[in-house]
Every structure is written in structure tokens, then in C-alpha cells.
Length: 132
Image (cartoon, rainbow, N blue to C red; front, side):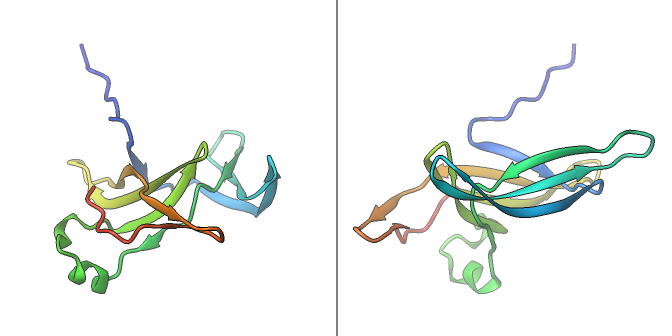
């Protein structure tokens, strides 16, 4: 019997998608908060198009060579990272480029609860080295 793969909590994989396009982008106000959103269109030959709405959880940025070289643990640095919010909880997201044994490229994702500081004007990430 084949064992079904299960992700561990706060981990995942994002795969390269060639049949998807963003057809609309904008904002939607939900529960008093303006959120970025987009409509994705999935197309496959001989099948009807499918559409999905995606609500942004946060912005990601590519880790620069300079950031990597300044890190105490450059081999552990993700290739992409960012602060995201899911169900009002804040997480640090790290993503690492990877390749399966079959040669398929994907991004391995890990989430870690964010260590945040706040003052009267804004909430911001505490400046510490993130170990994933």
C-alpha cells in the first residue's frame, strides 16, 4: 500500500505553474481591512477554464547575495522571505528553491510565528536572525 505524503505543520511546497495567469488585480475591503486580491485563470486544453480568487497574505522579497553573505548562517538563508498574516496571526515565511528527484523545480516553504514589537504607530518585526 502506498503511503500518502502529508505536510508537517507550517511547511509546504509551491510548484511551477504554466497553465495559470492573473486576469485581474486590485483590493477588496473585508471586515474593515483593505486586502490585495487577484483572480487567477487556469487553462488546460479540451477543458473549460477555471477561475480562483486569491487574497494576499503578505509581500515577499528575494534574498540578496549581500544579505546572504552578511548572515551568520548563509547556507540556511531562504531564497525568498517575508512577513505574512493568516487568520490574524503573523508569520515569517521562508522559501527555498529545490528540485525533486525527477527534476521538477519547486519552492520549499516554512512558516515561523513572527516575533513582533509594536508601538502606538505601527507593528514591526523584531530585528533578529531567523533560523528556519
